[in-house]
Image (cartoon, rainbow, N blue to C red):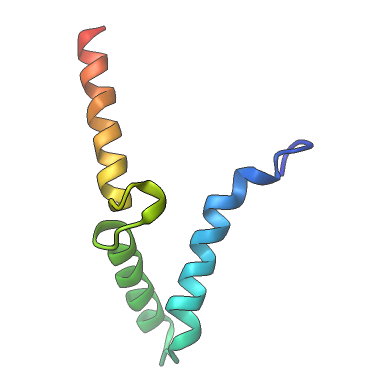
Length: 79
């Protein structure tokens, strides 16, 4: 929070970290740091590219992000 009333800025990130902890980290016992990194990376990949989210119209975060990037690129070409 960098200013009064800005606490909502972190909601998305805080929710994501909660999902990582409750759906991945707390359910497993990793042998070492490398295994933990590998498994968390797999979870993040699945979360972003395969798992649909109701809050964004039952699409994946990758679909939403890359469609907005494509739209922006097309607008930049027009301008």
